[in-house]
Length: 276
Image 1 (cartoon, one colour):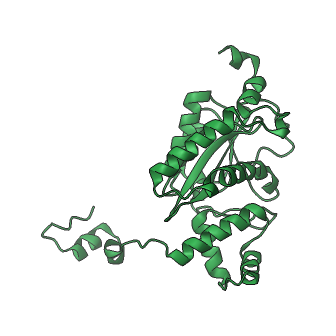
Image 2 (cartoon, rainbow, N blue to C red):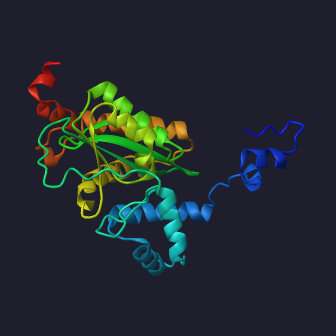
């Protein structure tokens, strides 16, 4: 919108557009090396102790000789998309102007493939900087139906991932997410509702239903991400893609009677969908 080559001064252009002049001149700064190291440690602690909030994480870091304020820990957690998995007044940071849909999974027996899909996003560290991994998971079989590695938490990435899953696997009965702003944005919710799916969002008392997705993040990070030091987004994207293909088709799960997620997904499909 701003044309720096135009004869009209940038200050006047900003005033006409109704935006702050500071936003025009501001250049985003990459995270410092100290913050990147701290974020990686927070990510590890969150995987080991997902119930820890900013206060408990700060105390744990201080015991390790890392002196940092609670507010700084909270800022980094928000940047990473981390939330403590425990009952709390606000289980996720949502946009105040976005509609929140009711939670539909309470006391629901999930026994079929394509009955309930879940979406979530996780922070992925690299050698320099970080990216975000968004995935669609079939709850009954734990199969990763679609995923995307991106550099932001925007709703367009969540929409793209769910549309990939629709194209490959059809339409589920329910799509469940948390109340993150990327999932409450109209761009994402319209993509789900226009397909005839019911949309469910975790709220108070529903924190336990996100645990199985956290187990996926644990597997991805300990069995793939933490063994590498990705030097670029394309490298991270390719390696995580290879891991998820292996996770779906070759990694047996004890909770699935040693079946792979792909085998469990095919076994749990309703007869009419198997025929299709």
